[in-house]
Image (cartoon, rainbow, N blue to C red):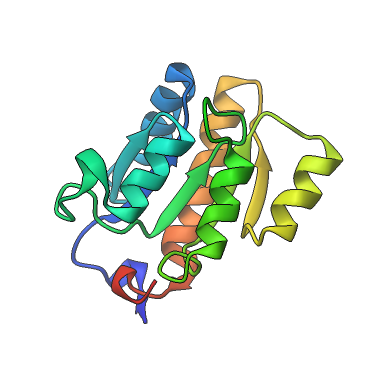
Length: 155
């Protein structure tokens, strides 16, 4: 295991988000010198699975390295976030990935189902831009600096 603060390269974060405004806010919050993040963005659940399984346009592992952290929206076109989380947890090569649900839904059934599918955290997106950015920075500091994660090759 390797503490993220000891890494020689930025942590790889896969953002699974179809909303362009939320993508931009996430970039603003996570991509700075303090956190050292290599943010990868996919727009749908199907694209997320292609990335994670190195299929289609993501077949080259150099273009789609294993993420240290997956930020997953639930409301996605095609394969939704719940289905993505279920697919991740049912695949032996992916099941150890750290997945944080980051969504607008605060509905109890979504929260319960996400934890049943073994998400590591469930965060409801704040509506205010400054709170959204602050929340993402806190999330980044926690998962990428405080927590010791297995290196991606052990996920």
